[in-house]
Length: 53
Image 1 (cartoon, rainbow, N blue to C red):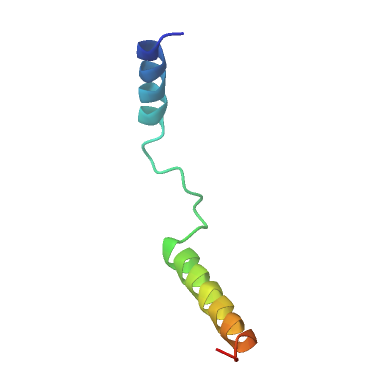
Image 2 (image 1 turned 90 degrees about the vertical axis):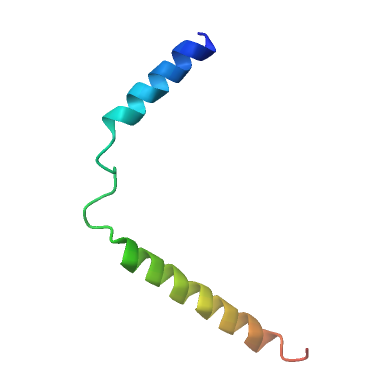
């Protein structure tokens, strides 16, 4: 398998999946918001345990 044939196969695979590939129930806004809230919660927990500094 040469580099050229591998690149051609990857280009074909990428062209077939042009519709995004995301699940319909996954909203980027909800996913990003949940990740942000989790990170802020972890930051808050970390600062509570590190009161001596």
